[in-house]
Amino acid sequence: MISGWLGVLVDSVLISQPKGDSLGMGIWLVLPLLTACIIILFSRVSWRDLGFRPNFKGNMKWYLASVLIFPVVTAIVLLIGAATNWIDLSAFNLKSFIFAFLSALLINFIIDIFEETAWRGYLTSQLVKLNLSALSYI
Image (tube, rainbow, N blue to C red; front, side, top):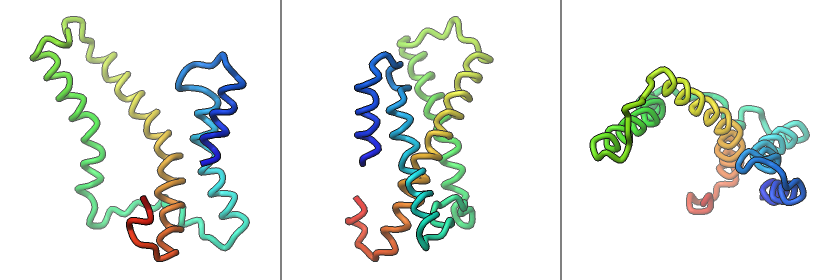
């Protein structure tokens, strides 16, 4: 929680930054994972608790769904937009589109590694060890 407010503080001091790509956003993104790594270094918590281990056994359909949902939803939005004339695809360049699409996918993948490792990987594993009810995680 403090990382978000620290990011807001940094952004309020450093005014001339691009919106959404500020140093404060970087602090908010990186600090929780860095904090989890520091806690692991100085405690008896295992590095396995960061959640880097994929669990393919019995979950392949969910991994496949997670890989396909982004391109499928993008294609559906483009098709609906073109069919309703909300989107003009006359100057559509497939090569540029694929480059932009893969760039956005890569950037989101990197961002999600920081976010999900800290919150779902480390924090969730620690809450499970406390034997709390599922409603306590919300």
